[in-house]
Image (tube, rainbow, N blue to C red; front, top):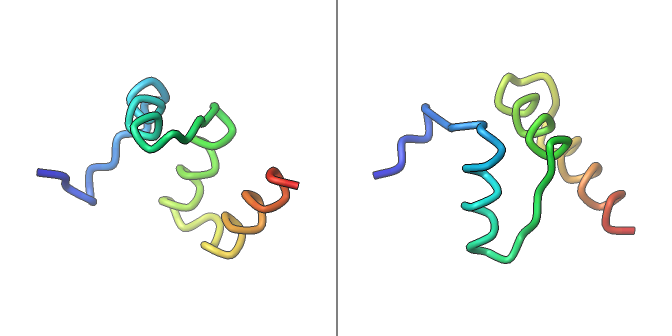
Length: 55
């Protein structure tokens, strides 16, 4: 079962997990998730970053 408190930031594992949902990620995406997890950025920052990259 998934433990939200033990999120694994290994990029290869994340790539596999996101690939199941047809989502490609890179090292920058992982770094952004780490910052969010460490409360260095807000969810709004994450959403802004994602929408800028989609444009």
